[in-house]
Image (cartoon, rainbow, N blue to C red; front, side, top):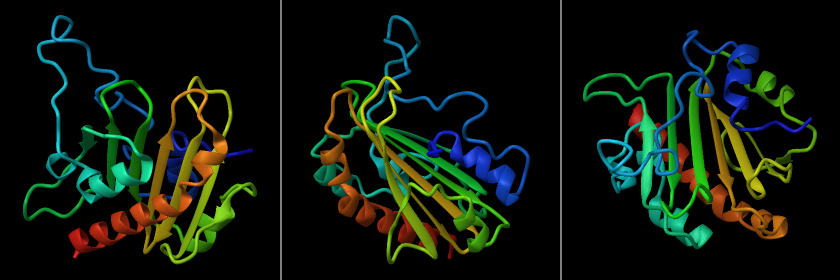
Length: 204
């Protein structure tokens, strides 16, 4: 069975022995993004346009210019959590959701989760349907999901590096061409490499 990104972090935490019982990005309240925020008449404030570097969580690790050039979209809204204060160690879990603000999709979601598991265990948990990505962490994969989820095809990419699991999912609008989404693998591999490098630099 193909793994879905939203469920994967929670499953991996249980299967791979990640630290803490509260490290579950799929549980609890949803991340506030431009898609699920109401209008000014429905809530106290309208969505705020953000620069990825100014957002919390995993957002600052994403190269927004590269994301836009790879997808041909104009991503303008981001929300992430949690974030470490200056001088604090990075938390074991970081998330980010990025949208254009025009519609629910396309969107990009990123999860970064600490784990005590080995790379061998990580590889054992991967679906047989995944394709390997060379030169990204200690083990990496990609897969394009075409299941009917109310959105279009989604490119999922994940990798393991030094006790940290990275999961990234780019979901396209309904009726997008799966072949066109698969053609984005090289570009998202470059985005992923940038995330890994920025995370490593922040971790010191």
